[in-house]
Image 1 (cartoon, rainbow, N blue to C red):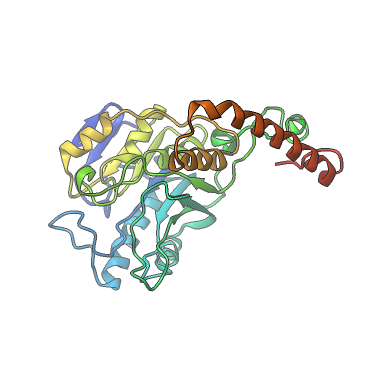
Image 2 (cartoon, helix red, strand yellow; image 1 turned 135 degrees about the horizontal axis):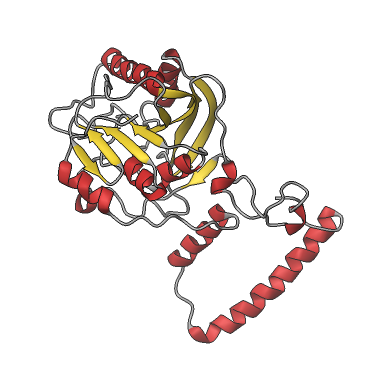
Length: 319
């Protein structure tokens, strides 16, 4: 069913510049997947007209109204990916927020962990203030309207390390990568590269979520912000709908027009990324030493393979 014209339309993406507390443009069950991250209510400067320090009862009321609308517009077997993180001084906020989503009618399917920083690479907000450790990860809660949604987990899968598993567990060289996603920020959200918004998330995060929902044609972000979810929709050729009552129009236009190259499918991506990051942190090796290093790496690899055969009784374990 065609939707009313949006306040901003770019490609297949449509934004309405009002609160998602009411989404009259969307019919019942008209959205296949929702990917969003609500305001965290901890004093972020989203917009001069919006207070991100609402009393808990008002914050809960706002999210409940929006979650109920999300429940109405989501298809019966649709998927809802809800990103929320704890604050250093408010551990448990994520649980309260997902609890309100359940109060609105959603069923909790699974908890995914979004790792933002690893081995010093990636942005996070230093928040411990000497009394706790800073949070390097956030949660992404997978919710459903009723029946558990059908997911294509291999759409963001990785190849088998042990190729003997092809045919045993899968007919193709691809396996489920699991529910811990390492998606670092390519640049920080500091003052020089703020992108006009206090807390944009990387486009790869919604891209992964959207790609896992087979045959999804229309996605929704009820807290559109700078349009990261819609940018991911455009990259996947999907129709995207966003709601943003405090739009920074030119910032959104730039985000939707910005290049996005989907990440490659890697073997053990978290490990490989970590090694590349570690390599960037270590001093550069002179060219004269590279061949010696390669020889030592080949020798160490042969030793490790021999050890695996001994420990595994003839071959490396499935992984």
